[in-house]
Image (spheres, helix red, strand yellow):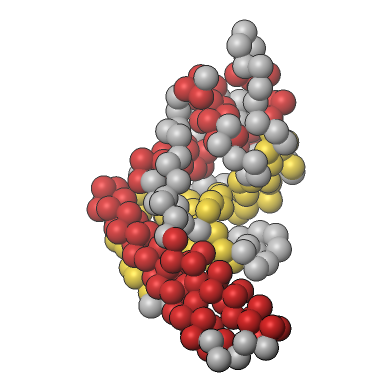
Length: 227
């Protein structure tokens, strides 16, 4: 059933490192020992848990750096590895400025505290767009014998006033199919258009190269649509 629309591949979630969860468990045990008065082993579990947890974070970042490096090489732009913020991709792709980076929620829109991967595409040659948010209401269901347009209107809410170019893009069936593919893979999803750019946020440990490139191509198509 998933391949109903077949525009964006199903995202393969990265293998989660067990070290982070093991480290958190050891820290929890350390605090439980303190409550029980077992201070002799407290610092062993506390330091060991923190060390193992940090090693898990390091492994996740290494996996992300490797995947993003392969993606950057595939699409012909550069990747940089920052010692604190981790990997980022920036350059020109299909005539648009592309940035892929990690940050806490609020870097692009909304609240704060949770880390995400952000993908931003912009083109200074386009007419500016007032802020518009394409928000997922619910994933499509009962898709048989229903039009793509009907499913799209049922699944997404357009918040704001799209300019003519964006309005045309959002009525294009190929673009609607790609957005419905995304809807079937997410519980929450929003795409933000503002000025001459469009942004989407994804999970922080995004490493599926084919999925990432399809997502970037979708954002470029949304920005560069000409009818």
